[in-house]
Length: 291
Image 1 (cartoon, helix red, strand yellow):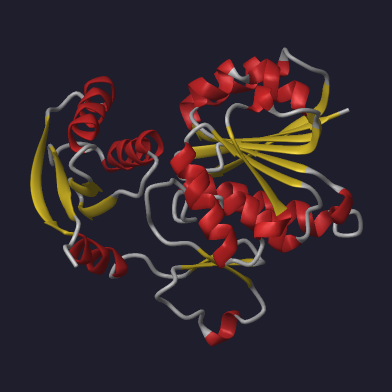
Image 2 (cartoon, rainbow, N blue to C red; image 1 turned 90 degrees about the horizontal axis):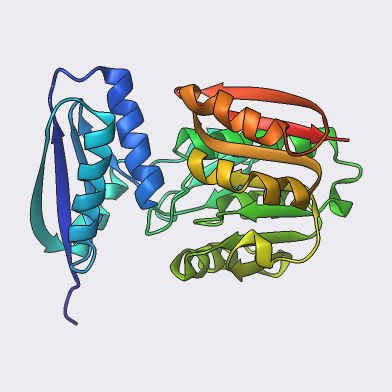
């Protein structure tokens, strides 16, 4: 069988770039391109692309660098077969504990014996964003963990909408802890295909309703709405997301400096009883409780 050729893109950034700024730039690439980014050293990033994708990805990274960094970047391309890429990624993606309940584990690893009491979510790096290693995803998983514990007696009656589901990890986690009706939506058909496959791997496929499209195309409102997407998109969707929310609206994908503008956009749309903030690294999560 002929091996599929993929391209290894290496992004080299000036070594004088501040470490925290480098972390933000790496996270922005992962969020914008909806795929994992490997940081090989303090100033070298690596990600994969197919033949069709490489020019789009190079252009996207260059545009991000122009708006985010003052120093120039250099992108190099090297072709190699996908088995090499997978072998390289397997060296870096290891099981991680998230919150008190979850263990995120790639399919090629076995959960450690001391983590037998945790809920294992099997997720591999791929085309869709969300492996549990990124701060924004972890913040959402930790929120699901806390909310499920605090509402365990009524959790099976609580509905949830996962906006921009990506790999499906948040919907899968919600199904594993016992949420009732769960809908996962993404406007990217490929992301929904990946999310369905991941739900099957984690034996929760029948518990999640998958939908390709926009939240405006979904009927009704949900007790909990989670949206882990970019801040500018969250702001644009503020009126819609608040209308879709009955109890709690959870927003992630927000850098610290973007928190105020996102908060203001949502605070003016609907009455709420309070908002709390969680932070991990340069990223924050906003949790709106509605009356």
